[in-house]
Image (cartoon, rainbow, N blue to C red; front, side):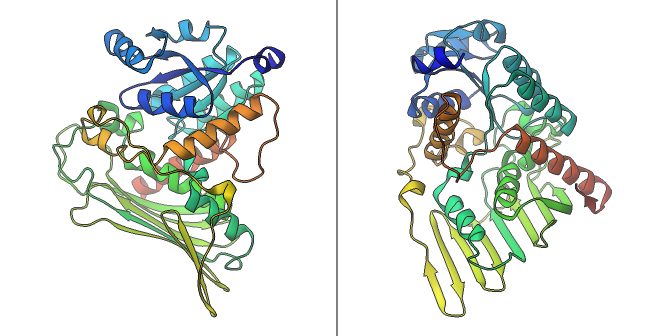
Length: 367
C-alpha cells in the first residue's frame, strides 16, 4: 500500500454528522488530504453537505466509502457510542483511522479498537488536536524541560455559559449519558489528555459529575465536572469545568513546582520564579495562524456555537499533517506527538473511572 499511496495525494473519507462534517473537511484539506467521500445518516442532508463541500461521493453506508480505492484515511466524527464499529471496520479494510474523542463507550470497546488497528498495521490517531495548540504545546515542552521543577500541583478551571440556557439545543446523543454525551466526554477528554501529555500517567482520582442548569426530562448527561487526581510522579491536580454557569467566563491553567509556576493564557505561556515572571517565546515550530471560524449559517444550535471560534482548525491541520507523514513514511517531529489509540484506551480508562467515582463517591485507583 505504501508505494501506491506515495505516488499520489492521500485521500480521506469523513464519517460525520452536523457541523463536524464541515470542520473535518477543511482540516483534512488544509493538511493536503483530498476528501473523496462523506458518510452520514440522512441521505438528503449528507448529499447536500457533500455538494456544498465539493465532496464527490455522499453515502449512508460505511462499506461504500471503504470500497473506494482512493480513500486512505477514515476520519470519524460521529457520536461516541458509534466509534468502535466504524473504527474496527475501517481498520479491517486497511484504512488509516483518525477517531474523535471521547474515544469509545467504555474501555472494553476502546481496547477492541486498538487491537483492530494494531492487527491491521494501520496508522491510528486520536482527535486530541489541542496537543498541537500553541499554548499547550509550549507549556508541555517547558514542563518537560524542568521550568518549574518536578510538578507538584496542577490547577485547571473553565466556567462558561454556553449551555446555561436549558432551551439550548444539542444533538440527542449529547444529552444522553448512555451514549457518551455530556460535558465530561466533550471537554474533559481534552483536559485529561493535556494533563497526561504534560504530567504523565495518573495513579488515581475522585470526581463528581453535576448538572447546574435546569434540564428538560430525558436529559441525563452532566454539564459540569470536578476531578481530583494524582499522577504516578506525585503531582496533585484539580480539574473543574462547567458549560452552564451564568456570568462572565472564568479560566485558569497553572502548574506549580518547587522552582516556580507556569501559567497558560491562550497562546501565551509565562513562568514565575523567585526572580520574577518571564513570558515564554513562541518557537517557530509551535506557532499557529489565527483561528478561522466556520461559515455563520452553519452555526444554528447551542452545540454548533461551541465550535464557532474556529480555534481547532490550526491544531487539527497539524495533527492530520503528522498522520499524513507517518502514512507516507516521512520523518515527524518528536514534539508535539499526536495521541494514538493507545492514548484513547488510557483516556477511556480514566473517563470510566471518573464515572464510577461520581456514582459511588469513591477514590478510584488507576494502573
